[in-house]
Length: 398
Ligand SMILES: [Mn+2]
Image (cartoon, rainbow, N blue to C red; front, side, top):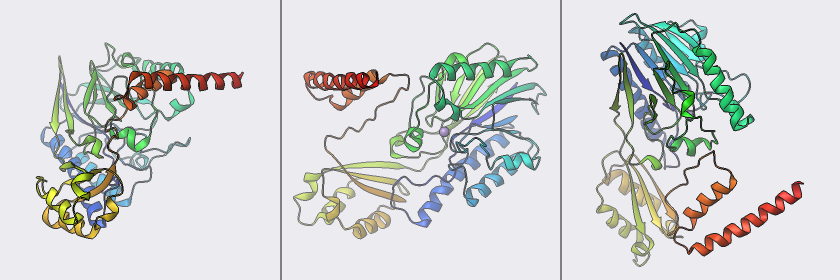
C-alpha cells in the first residue's frame, strides 16, 4: 500500500485579474496561495505520505519572481527534510515555448537535491515507497507544447506511443502517470481564460489501461474525475470570478488492492459578485449614496474579493471611486474589488470550447448561445450567410 498526495496548478505569483490593487493587496493574495501550499505540505507530512505529486504550473510565469521562487523552495525544503519525495512535471506556465524549455525548477535537479524529481521531458523513474518499500514507476508527461504543430491524430499517436514505450518492462508494483495535459470530457475553467489555449483533448483510453494504477493530472483548474482512475486535483485557489462558486481541494490517494481517493478541501478567500441594475442608480440624485445603500443590504464576508456588476452603460464614470473605495475597505472590509459595467443582455455563460469540433459545429454552438432568446429563423439566416462566406473562401483557395 502506498500513499500519494496529489496537487497541481499552484500558479504562484499570479496577479489579481483586474481588481483594484495595491502592493499590500497583491502581497496578501500571494500569501493566500502560499498558505494553501503550506497546508498541503503539513498534510503530506502528518499523514506520512510516500510521495508528493506536483502536476505542473507550479509558478505562474516561466521566470518566477524571487519571492515566488523563495516561498516555493522553502516549502519543498520542509517536505524533503521529512524524506517525502517530490514528483514534479512542468506545465504550460512553467515553461517557455522555445525549444530549450529550460525551467528554473531544473536548478533543483542541477544541485542534486535528494528526492526531488522533475519531468521536463516525458520520461519515467522507478522509486521505492518509503513506508512499504514497494516499487512505484512514475511516468511524467510535461505540457505538450508541440501539439500546436501536429494534426489531432498525429498528436494522439505520439503521446500514446510515448506512454507505451515508458510502460514497457513491468518492473513496478504500481504504475502512476503524472501529466499536465487536457483529457477529453474535462470541464474547462479558468486555465482557459488565463492562457487562451487551444488544446487537443486526449482520449481517456491513452491512460485507461490495466497496468496503469492511477493518472494524476494538472492543467484543468476544477477538481474532477474524468475517467476510470484519471483525476485532476484542480488548482489550490480560485483565480478569477468564473470560479466563484467552486471549491478547491487536493487529493489523498491510497493505492493497494483497491484505490481510495479522498478530496481534501482547501481554505479559500471568499469571492462574491453583486449585480445592480442601471435603473436602481440613475434615477437618484446622489448616485454614490444610492450605491452604498444598495451595497449595505448585502452580506459580504470580511476579506472578500468583491465584484460589482452594473447592468447598463455609462454609469461608472459618475461614481466617485474614492468614496466607494473607502466604503468597501472600511465598512465592508473587502480585500479587493472591481466595478464593471455589463450589457443587460450580455451572456453570463461562456461557450465551453470543445477543440474536437470542426468550424461548423463550433458555429452552431456559438449561435445557439448567442441567439438563444431569438426566433430560430434568425439563427438559420445567420448560418446561411456564414456558409455562403465559407463557400466563397473555399472557391478562392482553389
Ligand atoms: Mn496549465
